[in-house]
Amino acid sequence: MTKSPLHIALLSRSPGCYSTRRLVEAAEHRGHDAVVLDTLKFGMFVESKSPQLTYRGDDIPEFDAVIPRIGTSISFYGASVVRQFEQMGVFSLNSAAAITASRDKLRSMQTLSRHDIGIAPSAFVARKRDVLPAIERVGGAPVIIKLLEGTQGVGVILADSVKIAEAIIETLQSTRQNVLIQKFVSESRGRDIRAFVIGDRVVAAMRRRAQGQEFRSNVHRGGVTEPVILDEAYERTAVRAAQIMGLRVAGVDMLEGADGPVIMEVNSSPGLEGIEASSQKDIAGEIIDYLAEHVRFADLDIRQRLSFARGYVVSEFTVTSNSPLDGVRLTQSGLKSRGIMVMSINRNGQHFPAPTGDDELHHGDKLLCYGPKVALQDFLPSMKPRVKGKKVHE
Image (tube, rainbow, N blue to C red; front, side, top):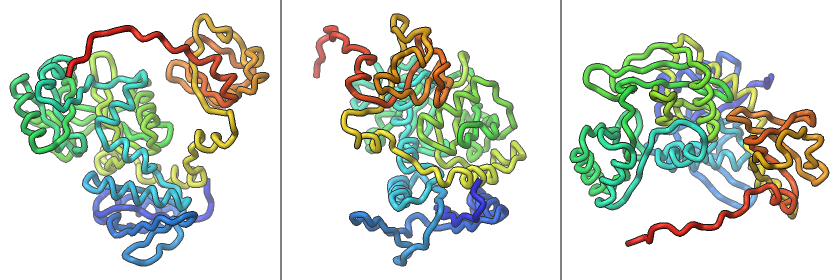
């Protein structure tokens, strides 16, 4: 862990709110210096080899790290400030790219959908005539209708019938609001789980329950909380969701579906009040400890860095059942002799970083590799011939 004290910029427009105060207290308790700065008072200057930031028109001092607490209403500007800090070589607890991706509910679902992780069937359409087919495709009414950038339960509506859903969507679209249609997980009505992820572990979790007729369980909506110990499936799902979204610190909201956890949202600026009260844990302190431990490990775009070696790429491929790699140890695979370095193995969602030569490969393993493009392409799946489908009509 870093021994010298850190100079931390905490981006927040609400210095008096619980989460901001707790982070400052936790930082100072550990001997660090934390300064709360209003995100909208920064100025950004983009110059060749010299990205700069000002605050209230003045040059800012050097910071070791930045903790973004950016509200939804200023997502674009806030992410731009974080990105400028990153360009200046300052470590950010959550990256600008991850914040931007997680704020867009549709983009989040699209990103998660590529992976073997539980999500609610969702649809996004622009034309009125496509609304009814979209509702039917996600499972029919009742459905949840969400504004793409809502927060704290704002812009989340339960429509009990198709007619009501159509009317709500038509009204929102007429005001140029983008909405997401999601299957309603009835077995989890009025309750969900918030898992607080820091790095590669869940540090605390709570179950939130709505009160009265309210179906939204957000604490800001009057929901009550209770601590919960997650089983392995829920904990693994929460950590994977945060990592897929690229978030070091995240609040992962899950419904308790009939077949296991269902991801509803991955929050890049999760509040601390509810989770600390429920768990009786120093979550703010855990965040500061993580920051101090990882501050020197800045984000590295490995694809961008390695692109300088001509003809070399980073790629991922799956070991198939008829592959010569199936059942073979890495030392016997012949990959090294072809200049291919296996950086990690993903086996059924479990990651094995920096595998050794004694590790045995099995079909279904996903190998993340670095090596010559001409060698790696032999392990990539062939392009499948396209099957003629229905004719597309305007």
